[in-house]
Every structure is written in structure tokens, then in C-alpha cells.
Image 1 (cartoon, rainbow, N blue to C red):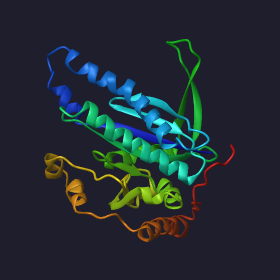
Image 2: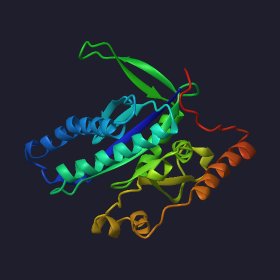
Image 3: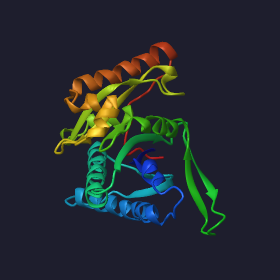
Length: 264
């Protein structure tokens, strides 16, 4: 079974909290408490809106919270559901920034990746000792690690995608709702046997991401993105095919395309 994992992280939060060094945490605590309580509700609302005309609304759950990051997990059944879910999360990010960060130097960034639980990844039950409410479900494995590796290439207002997510999205009938960019390649520890991994950015095709001046000035990747145009689907498919060929020819590994809706 494939599960989709989504990370949404605050950008600029460390610098913001540093303003209050030596002071009470009251100056920043409410801002972060609001994010962890309100943002998941906003995501659920946007999922509901996105699937308003469908027979059923996909479930999306908070997996856990880490630092200034909230992680979601869901199980899309079709490529179209995947694409719509990503669009809904991006819309929630944009609305949250406009509502809560308009007067603050903080932004949101996101990452989306698959983990295959018919393969090398596993879910484990961790006893919840403090609350007495049973076990806490956690996920571990190489696909989970990949997601955390690529999160560092997400930027404000942008979602970075794993290649598996990209491939399924490209096969969806609503792929045109997403603007996709190949922003280069970076080596990732423990991923693809050291070969540089393609960095794929996404935003909603109906929206233009506005970077702040200092983001452009200090981040070469953002500066390059300002004038970048979406990468053609054929070029993105070639990137996927090239990586698959590399794994097969050099390392004898077959990496089949991700399939949604499989039974465990």
C-alpha cells in the first residue's frame, strides 16, 4: 500500500523566536500554538472544498508534529485524488500565510512523498505511556528517509515532490492544475546510491508564487526560480526514465512506477 506523506514547515521561525531571547515565551508561543491547532483544520477544510463535487472526501490525518513542522499522512486512491490533495494543501498554506503571517516574517513550505508499505517500509506501534490512550503509530523505512532528505529543498510557497509523486501526478487527468519545475539536482545521503537527485518544485498553476525581496537576494535557488518557466511534462518524464535506467543498469534494481489503490 502506498501512503502519501506531506510536511508543512514554517520558514523564518527560528529567527522570529530569537527576537524573544531572554524574555518570556508568551511573545511567540500563541503564534506556534495557533499554527499547530488551526493549520490542520484549514487543510481539512480545503480538502473538503477541493472534493466538494465528489462522492467522498479523502481522509488526511496529522501523523506528528516536529519542531516547527506538521506532518500529514493520507492514502490517495487515484492520480487525480493525489493532484487535488496537493493543490488543497498548497491553497491552505497560501490562505494561512495571508491570514496569520501578513505582519510577520514567516512563510510556509511543503514536501510530498510516497512510502510503500508493501516494500521496505514498516509501521510500528509505539506505546503511548503518558496519555494512556493506547499506541502511537509511527513509520520508518528508506522512503520515509527520502522525504526528510528532500524537505531542505522546499522553499516558501513551494512544495517539493519526490519522483514517485511526480510520476503519478503526470499521469493524472488534472495534471494541468499543477505548475512543475525541475530546479536542478542534488546528492542526497543514502538515496540513489549517491547519484544527484532531481529537485522538483510545484505550485498551483492558477497562482503565482511571490517571493519576498530578501528571499530572492539570499537564496540562489529562489533567484533562479523568479524567471523560470514550468518544465514540460516530456522533460520531466525523461528525468524519471533516466533515473530508472540508472538504477537498473548500474545497480540491478528495478523501480516500478508507483501504483495507487493497491490492497495491503
